[in-house]
Image (cartoon, rainbow, N blue to C red; front, side, top):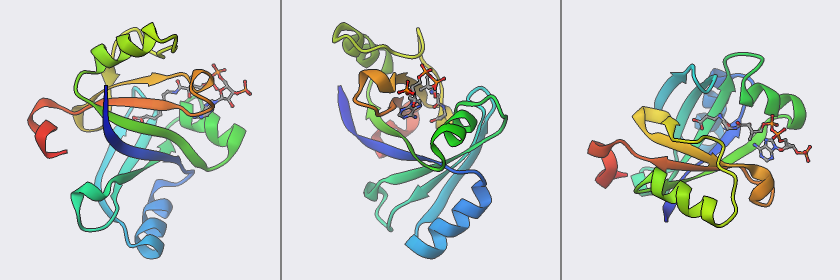
Length: 144
Ligand code: CMX
């Protein structure tokens, strides 16, 4: 099942501009930047407050015009694109949600931030919210 909120994902047009904005206005700290070509994103994890348990906002900028984030920006403009939950076992949770009638986007998990394993529930099945499931990479599991 779901353990906690992993991050809230926000689609932005320009990652560097957004990082600067979140630092200056909200006092958040950029703790990780990564490019994920499979997902077509350049992304930044912004830590809320000094306590790691304060949670994260993930800024997502498109790498290509065909990417999910580019499509989202075109249709909806910048804003909240996804809510992500930490899970222990993405395959098991995906199966559980499938058995409750949810469409999972991938037949099996793909690679997400920092080597995590991820899958998504289609937003049309989840009340208009794109739900991401995140299984942290094994060594970091207990710290997240
Ligand atoms: N949140 C809420 N609703 C969304 C949405 C989102 N992020 N993205 C699309 N929708 C809605 C659209 O508004 C549209 O609604 P209407 O039919 O009422 O107009 C409907 O879903 C479209 O659905 P679709 O045609 O099946 O799908 P799209 O081509 O728009 O793609 C989605 C949507 C979720 C399948 C696609 O964005 C996707 O594959 N996402 C998963 C991957 C991803 O988001 N990667 C980026 C983040 C990477 C990371 O977190 O690591």
